[in-house]
Length: 401
Image (cartoon, rainbow, N blue to C red; front, side, top):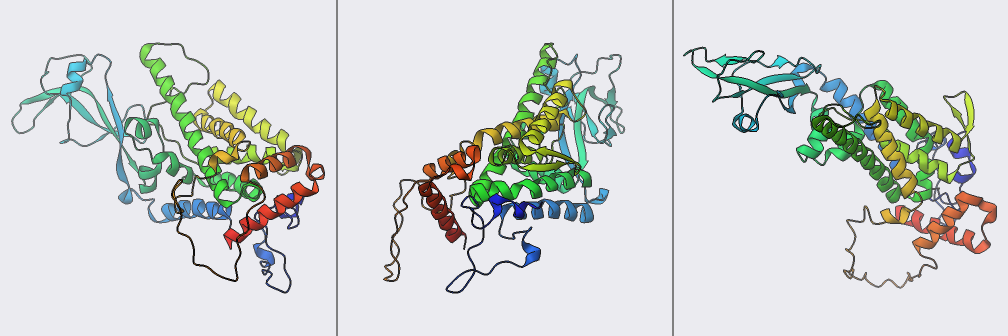
């Protein structure tokens, strides 16, 4: 069964907020061609998929050569015996070729030296100036760099970049980057299957806000667990299950944090809808989604190879479960082009052919009806509630035209 064959996506269902208007004479809108039914071009979800695929294809085709790479700072590290005073005096030695990092594949480093210390020490190099033979200083650490493609260099997320270096935009940009084709295909398949359902229930703007906020929460969950794990390493604390002990500059990319939020929202809106897990196993949507969440949580606690990604999944899922029940909190997320709150908008010129209609219900009332619809089904709604949803759907459709 395709997503547009389901009850909640039909044009006569009031919850189908993104549905097309009725066809027919007298001003009705034309229905889209049949080939567009599963790809509504005006949908935010559709453009989300298009942008993710375009970013992956463009940068892999045209910027995936070493000549196009840029050196991304990967943070400094110091040897354990280095004093605070030596760290303060430390200088990166730029006159030598970068060397491969001994522990981190794909990362290079330049030596950090203390120019006022040339005391011999086992395991520490003392650098000498070739021309004069003058000692430059003793090695006290490494200034790490990573040759990266430009999209990764600008957009990937890590605790070091987003928190220590305050590059906060990365909490959004990492959601549009993917490690490989399999990573991209699996994420886009999840968006294609379930994103439209959530967007139809929330409307285009609130769905966009919902998706991005879930992704942000996923990134912040990763950051928190990674930072706490490194603090535990520094103070010699216990190795607690669920903390991330990876390097603070370990990258995080992918849309899956936002998608886990979408999955939780879909399970809330259509919990008993049957889905084919891995295309072979029929399950109720709520059972499938909760199974995925439990698997991610177990993988995080057990420290799997993708524990950082699982942390982002859990953060996105928690945000999705929270905001789908309180979607009014995201109501003004993208209303930046309209009049500010408290500011009186400029009245439009009078048009005798138009009349002002005062909405009968508030958005809060609509949210309550949608929640009731998700809990108990369409048959439980009164005629007044159905009429309210239909009026709200028509109002949203009018704004989108």
